[in-house]
Image (cartoon, rainbow, N blue to C red; front, side, top):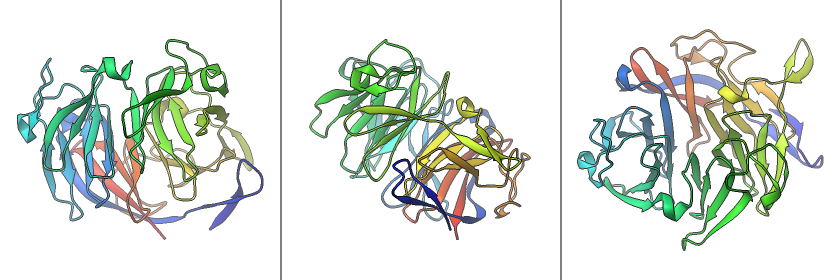
Length: 325
């Protein structure tokens, strides 16, 4: 276990080591549904997966059995609520779950946040008018607070539905750090939360680092560096990262465009989890460093602290697991 200094210089954050990669479920979606965009895990360890084009949300249980939670699987210009496969979705860009096991998802066409009960009943949770903006990414924490990234600001809805702007300003673009409305975002998207209540957000355009937002709304930028020839140099692939997660030790994880995962300490030092640098694309379970992955998308931690990833392959979308030592 490696210890690295955190951003306040007083605490130590331990990087968790992983020893093997295994397949949880293969071909969860067919090849036409490639471009895996959404992943979440409920409190019972069930995994939920969707892709941008799938028009359906599927559940993978602990035994790797795949079933349809909701959605017809057919594209439509109009979203329809209903039970299970009676519901109709356009596009799905993000998934989350609350403390009661309900699943929530957002889409780029319908511009709403919709809710699915554990038994598959789909309803509209928030409209675009109620959110004030379109949700490009969102997070529900353990207390069922809802955080929405709408490109230029981060909104917070408490469990009673009261909303506030935590940081940023609607339609005010930029990259400035600062508190509350002083901060600027270029394209706020994926969100994760650490054990201290800080949010971490990845921007989709012009990303200069991972943005950190404290519970008080103070925004700072974590510049990422990786070791190259024994020297730490700036990491330049952040815009292409498709996944963001935080482990129990507050280490940041992002999936990279070169078939790898970066573990990032709070002070921005990155370490490749699957072996140094670019990795060949492929499909092979086995020890970390020998296993092969392909087009890693979203990532999330299960109840055991193992890292779940979704990937795009010729046979469709796979769910893989990186197990802790």
